[in-house]
Amino acid sequence: MTKLSGNPLITITDQLADEKQAILASIIAELEDAVISSTTKGIITTWNPAAEKMFGYTEAEALGKSISLIIPQNKSAEKNYILGQILLGKKVAHFDTFRIAKDRHQVPVSITVSPIRNNKGMIIGASKIVKDISDRQLANEKQAILAAIVATSDDAIVSKTLQGIITSWNQAAVRTFGYTEEEAIGKHISLIIPPDRLSEEDFIIGQIAKGKKVDHFETVRRHKDGREVHLSVTVSPVVSSSGTIIGASKVARDVTAIKHAAEKQGMLAAIVGSSDDTIVSKTLEGIITSWNQAAEKMFGYTEAEALGQHISLIIPPERLNEEKFIIGEVSKGNKVDHFETVRVAKGGRQVPISLSVSPIIDENGKIIGASKIARDISEHLAVQEEKARLYDEIKELNDKKDEFIGLASHELKTPLTSIQGYLQILNNDMSEERRKDFLNRASRQIKKLNDLVSDLLDISKIQAGKLQFTLATLDLCQVTRDAIELIAYSNQTHRVVLKTELETLPIQGDAQRIEQVILNLLTNAIRYSPGKYEVEVHLSQENGLAKLSVRDQGIGIPADKLEQIFSRFYRVTENKNISGLGLGLYLSQQIVERHHGHIWAESTPGEGSVFYFTLPIKAS
Ligand code: ADP
Image (cartoon, rainbow, N blue to C red; front, side):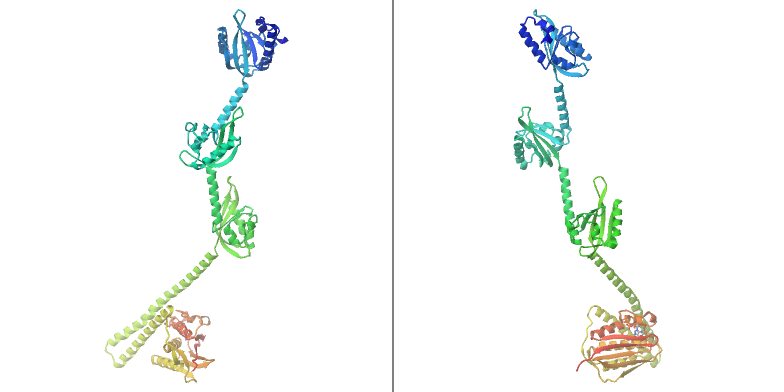
């Protein structure tokens, strides 16, 4: 109070009772607002403690100074305006501006200036109540910042009343839901809620009304164009300054893309899981990090057994260096495709596989492992081997066929050419004797042709499984004698001698076919012993078998070919000059074996051959 003594304000209130004055002075001293008075000339006459605090000048420093002390230089227009109003006897209320403190910092203020009159009613000065509005300014700035954050947020931020009426709608909400701010504000929030999810809103509002927050609630909302938007929503109560809940603010994050990614990931996982191909992944150090069902089946280890193990679990020791190669390639970012190799299953069983290995790359582009797709190729290998075998077989048959066609056409043509020649000669005038001779020759060639064609027919019958036998009991001695007689008739070069102690030798068979076998052996013996004169036939019985042999003194057969001469179309290359199709012995073997017999040959090249066959004797 003493502070105020001598203050001009007191001089203008000297009419007032001392007590009243003292009360006023103490109020002014205690006020949080700066109270300053000045003369009409702008000389400061009052400066309360709040003014000291606000502007940094003590009362002693301020009193008697011009009010310009605290008015920024560029505010002279403002100063004149206020002074003008005061001189007119008017009040300037809540004028927001700023003043300068002693330390030159700007103080945002709200000023109310009133004229001061003397007891004659003359305006003698002005009183100013100056309110520091720095806090308000700060709050405004803060609000502006918050508004900017909300406006620029990537998340949709929406607020609504407890009745669900939308009260704010940021840019991201515009993007997320397709409605502009004008379209959305004032509307009910059901604007963006699919009908089947309206009950969710009741739940959310219920929580909010209780003052609770709803966090990361995953749901679906509807875009203006009808499409579904997957959101993660956080809803918080909006509380008024008086503490009542007046609405809710929602922050909604569009998780459609994440949802799709998750769905895609789920789908990929399902594909890997159900794939028929083995899919395994591992780190670059070879530690198994995934193992699908097909891998369990192929290698016999369960997922639990395989995860965390080194991949050498399934690599045969001798193939461990393959792994080095594969990891080397994968580390360079290369793929290893269709690498055929072998792995070992749980029990030690070897599994031939075709392997494709690709690098696994993380989101930063770093190679962090390898994924392998393995396909069991055991079956494939078996099929391939079978194919290769069939191919070889077909190729061999095809070669034989080509060779045979060449041979057959030659063999068939030769007798025809001869016959044609003899018939031409016959056509000319010639003696009876020569005519007979040529007719004989012609008929021999016809027989040869006939035999060839018969052999060919037999072959095709065997091929088709249609070679039929007419079985009867027959005497092998008789059949042999008949065959020798037939040969003697058509052959002039060799003598065929039958050596046997037997009168009869009963067997069960087709007489014509057995004779065909004997004739074939005799013909061969004669054909393959050029320059020799004798062929010996033996008939005997041994251990219940009838045995026949044909011995010649001919060219013989090399030991390594003795087996093969019974194959179809097989001819010993050394005797190319002797004609033939390589069918006779094959047919003979077929006939003998179908009579439950056996046929073979023994030979010494250059000395001759012996052909044998045995047949079961028919018990009488
Ligand atoms: P082809 O005599 O028509 O060639 P075969 O099947 O009767 O057919 O005989 C097969 C092959 O066996 C003959 O090409 C020949 O090389 C050889 N061969 C058969 N019999 C004799 C034999 N008695 N002496 C030497 N080689 C023979």
